[in-house]
Every structure is written in C-alpha cells, then in structure tokens.
Image (cartoon, rainbow, N blue to C red; front, side):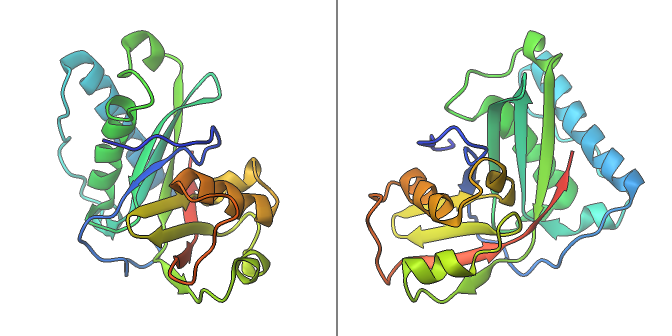
Length: 210
C-alpha cells in the first residue's frame, strides 16, 4: 500500500522501486500515442469503478507505448490531490505501467477512500514518464541545493529504510531549492536539520502528459 506523505504538495506521490532497470531511455510519444495513453487511464478508472476490480486492457500496437518505462499517475479532484502512485524503476511496458498506477492511485492510495462513481465525473489526471535516474555525488546538503535545476529536476533520496521522491511538478508549489529539499526530507521521515553522507541522491526529469 502507498505510504502517506507529510505534505499536501503534488509531492504526495507514493513511489515503488521494484527490481527492473533504471536505464530506460527517454520516450517520445506522438500526439496520437499520448491520446491513447490517456484513454487507457480513463478505461481503467471507469472499468474499475464499475466492476470493483482491476482489469488490464488489451495491449496497444504502438511500439512506443510498449517500451519499458517508469511512470507516476496523479489524480486530482476539484484541483486538489486525490491520489498519486508510481515507480522510479521501470518494470513494465509504458502503457501497462500507467494502467497499473492509474488503478493504484484511485483505489490503493491509503490517504484516500477508493474512488467513487460520483468523483469519477470530476476527476482529471496527469501522467509523468520518468527519465533514467542519475546519481548525484553527496558532498553536502548545500551542494545538492546549489546544483538542482529549478522546475526541471525530480529528486530521489534513499537511506535505508527511508526513501522519498519529488516529481518535477512539485516545483510549482515549492519553487525554492532549499525548501524543496527540506520538504522532501520531511516526506521521507528525516528530521529537517538532518543530513548524512550515507544518503543516496538521484535526479531525473519527466515528460508530463495531461
């Protein structure tokens, strides 16, 4: 089950690692392929509300949608976060990963009740397709803050047993790099003033489909 977040930013996405590869290349989708990917999300949400279970749709013929990719799906209700789950390691074909996280965002995000039919009428969503993770040398917290690209970088912090991730979309609500890192530490359960050389740092970018 997705872990709850200590913030109400679009940070509130719960991440899963899995055992796949983080070496997936950046994926470029045509307008038609983006439309098809969004249609998959609607199909999963509508069928799951009606049937009360997850059913994977038939696969697409598009080779681009068949590429292995890591994604997050964020749901909004009346412009407020309504669910968000995803993975930073690529385990499934793009279309299937999106379908699985569309379902988990709607029905398995422990911060929210399962999506209802009435809510479905007012839901909108976005899909983030993650680039490969790039590890950053952990020189210091300030060094990390200084090298972040505002509005571009997503950030992953790992120090067993804690993991926390912010998508690049979080910059809309946290435009200051210092606050971005501080809030991510809070989300992961680290004290605000804590830092250690054993924290692993990874940056990534994402393609946003709305």
